[in-house]
Length: 60
Image (tube, rainbow, N blue to C red):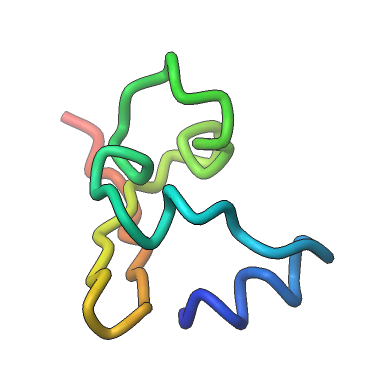
């Protein structure tokens, strides 16, 4: 998804830190914005392209 598509889905602009820092997208549950973790996804951002791929986590 593009950052613009994500903004459209959530109804708000992503914070500047989402475009600046890969850490914003990491799977650390301390990041309260990481709601994709609740659905067992991880985020793979490409900040240069302003896109992120969500990948379903593999259960062991």
